[in-house]
Amino acid sequence: MQIKESKQGEVLILTISEHLDSATATVFESRLLGLVDRGERKIVIDCGSLEYVNSAGLKVFLLAAKRLEPLGGKLVLCALAPSVLMIFEMIGFTRIMKIVPSLDDALKALGGEAAPA
Amino acid sequence: MHEGSITVRLPADLREIERLNRIVRQFGDLHEVPSRVLYAVNLALDEVVTNVVRHGFDDATGQEIEAQVIARSGEVTTEIADAGRDFNPLKVPPPNLEAPLAERTLGGLGIHLIRSLMDGIDYRRENGKNVLTMRKRIR
Image 1 (cartoon, each protein chain N blue to C red):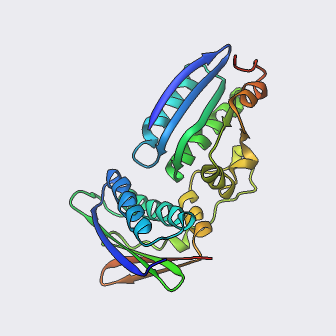
Image 2 (image 1 turned 45 degrees about the horizontal axis):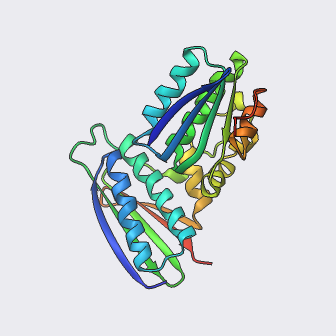
C-alpha cells in the first residue's frame, strides 16, 4: 500500500492505493490517527486507487471516524471502486460514513472548494 | 468453470496472505472461476487466515495453516485447517449494522464479511484442528 498526503485549505487529503489488508492496516492506522492527534479535523481519504480492503482496513476507517466525531471533525471517503464500495455496504459503513463519488464531491462536503482542474 | 483443486500450506504470518491470494487467483484464472466468485473466495480466505494468525496461537512462529480450494459442480469450496486454539467463528455474534457511529464496535467485522460473501459455512473440530469449510455458488 502507498499513502500520499496533501492539504487543500483546511482539508487534509490522504490518497491510498493498492491493498489495505492485515499486513498494511497498522501503518495506515498510525498515519491516519496521527493526523487526527496532530489536530486535523477535515480529512478526505481518496480511495480511487484502492484495489482491495479487508476487515483490518475497514476497522481503521471506523476508528478514525469514531475518533473525529466527538472532536467535531469529519471523515469523507471518495472514489471507491465498485468492489470496495460493495464491502463498505456489506459492513454497514455507508450508513455511518460520508462516502461520495469524487474528490471534488468530498471537498464540497467539507465546505472547501473543488480542486483546480 | 473447470473442475480442479489446489492445496496451499502457508506459515501463520499475515504477510503470507497476499501470496495465498495470488496463488488462488492464478488457480481461479486457470479454472475459469468467475471473477466475482474469485474475489469473494479470496476475501473470505483472507479474513479466516487473518483471524487464525491473530488469535489462534500464543505464538504463531513456526505454525502452519492449510488452505484448500476446490472448483466443482457449480461451486467453489474452500477448506481451511489450523492447529490453533479451539475457535468456532460461527459463534461470534454479528455486529449491529444499525447502530450509530459512536456505538459501532470494531469486533465481528471479518466474520460478518465471510457470512455475507459465502453461501454456506461449516465448522468442525477434528483431530485437534479447526476446520472451516465455505461454499460459494457460481450463479
